[in-house]
Length: 309
Image: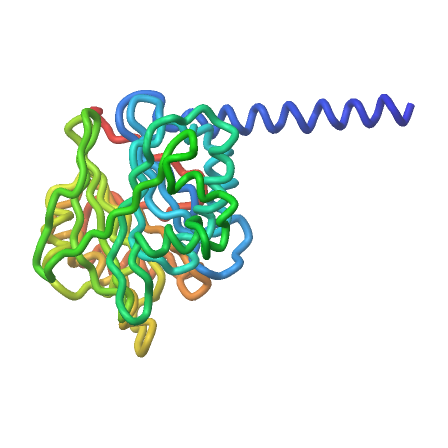
């Protein structure tokens, strides 16, 4: 009897996993879609991985934006395949945007990926390493933290990670990468003393823009977001935030101002933290004073297909 019960429980758990995975994998079956892998910030919030996003193109995950803690698990749950990724982008290198990248790379050892994985991110300063130094610090010999995976940054592995630092002027928006499926644009954004970038991914005549963490200063991000089909903005602080948190992040009214001026079709709020969770009504009111389009509050694994793609 006990054995039958154990077998039943095992079968039930397997079926739930299969059904759950199938539901997640439905994001991006055709056209262009955004999937939120991690909708949280650096806090340990139940049900929320840290910041991470996928852009799906015709049923395949092609662009990865950030890879915070918990995102590797969400990547697997989404049904995405590491082999399909065309590019990985880091908005900046805070732990809650980058910690699970080594886990993703280790997992790729068990896949059939053969082509290069280009990684783009910000340059360094006295506070943070450049993206190229970050990747070398993780994997390169002799001093990399995970130097046992050094084949991924040399010519010895099945494929190679190539890291590129994106250095931009304060008012500059520039294309940084493209292939037959997508184009990537970037702009410098202000996140206190931390080098940071916003990104625009264009594919199939549609555009998805990522603010990353930013305080809303400067004009370049507004240019990057102009006319976007979907903007992912980070709702990390409430209206009225002051001090250090305001120097790092934009409050809802600033999100609304930027989104309204850029004439964005749809706004998705992510990077939701304890100080903003439960304040959705006032957040929405502050945004809608400047922007009248569709606004969504993201949760992990949420999928946003773009109409007409």
